[in-house]
Length: 150
Image (cartoon, rainbow, N blue to C red; front, side):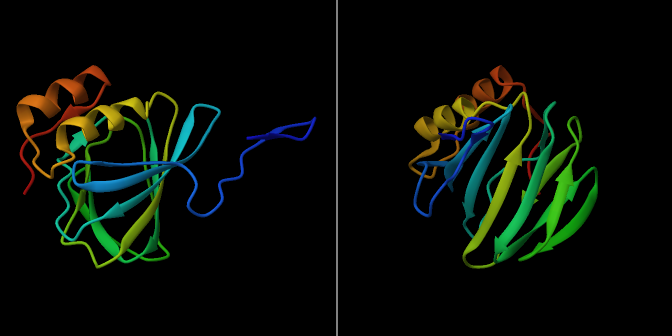
């Protein structure tokens, strides 16, 4: 972060940021500002994120590739160049199969905590998603799973 005497400015250069894998998706924390967290997410072709909701809003912008996003029972196609915003408290799920090299810029609103993804990384880094380990982490950070993914 740089301070220009008027404003705190965040500049995240290519390759910068804390990187880890959670729920079999590669994530890079690119910036944190005013309660928001900006992630660069790399999705595999098999998306393992379960349907869920949480109190914070999210914005997804497809940088490359693409996937589908189920939001409140409606499925949207999100190819490269597409932005989709999801209000807090609305059920959603990124869904596969994702295109090869699907990368998204994901902005998670105030109330989200990147620590949740660090903890998920510790229990899912081997690619295995054990719900007995994952569910308590999600619930502790305010994420409510909706049920099994389709």
